[in-house]
Image (cartoon, rainbow, N blue to C red; front, side, top):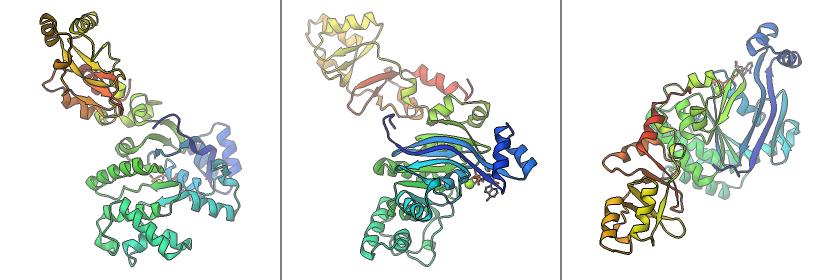
Length: 400
Ligand SMILES: Nc1ncnc2c1ncn2[C@@H]1O[C@H](COP(=O)(O)OP(=O)(O)OP(=O)(O)O)[C@@H](O)[C@H]1O
Ligand SMILES: [Mg+2]
């Protein structure tokens, strides 16, 4: 996701104390006591302490942390299923903690739908009727809710299953119904609390992939909770790491892996398969020189020798990548007095987009001696990846 994205939700100085003397707990917190000490002294749990972050429009933000770190508390404070003790949560110009009951109800309907870990489907309702549920309790007219539910079932790949009952579906399919029900509400933010944690590992992986695709298609702002690091790294545009009710780090999966905020995060990410997370963008190097498609062989040879290259990428006027030529061929063309390198152009060369993980790149080094070209959506050459850079990254651990 890009830096130019707009902010969807602002969370400022959010804290939550479970207990009847929140003031005291927060005072002790401000005096420097930690969660365990506050619990011992007052019997109250500091569920969240001074949480600050922005949710960007259209991103998939993962909140991750061990059991008890405050993930559910955080997501539930956002829509006030749990009443925050202090702080601001700003969405669409409204500050959620300050809304009265009526405004809160309205705000929830407009902005938030939840998908739960245990699917929470009604066994005696069909798939279609389950997907319609949220709309039904909002009093949406029958024809409209039927249409919306049908569309969202289609989005999650369940068209044709409208008349089935939940117990006729696999776990993965049941959770798709949960997802469809949330999507049908047409809220601006999707909240998913451990939504895939009850699924078998393989199905879970499938669902993660589908969520990523759905996310790209619909650009729905999604906050996804998990205690599973692999899941977080796999699906998150950004990850918020919570520990004991506090944020330890906010960053992209790559940042969390390659620049852990502290030893805790570094330990957490030890043993992670970096090849699935680190991307071509991170290891690519600038291209030393390129040839133009209308350069003559001698010009190309000069560029190559000046830059110690034995192959060189060829681009057109718009800097779009056309192919690659090798020194040998160019030399022969020069000797033969040819005035163009066009015939030499190899168009079958390895290339990837910058977000491609190293796991995909690595096999590309087999056989061919070319580096891997990194190109953008417009075919423009952004950089190259050499085998050594990939090996170097994969050899590193989380702590560096
Ligand atoms: N209603 C409550 N009353 C008292 N303490 C609570 C309450 N709800 C949560 N807590 C405490 O707040 C802390 C954070 O809980 P929370 O449920 O947010 O954690 P979590 O990160 O979602 O954990 P899990 O991965 O197990 O779901 C825990 O110490 C928990 O015991
Ligand atoms: Mg939880």
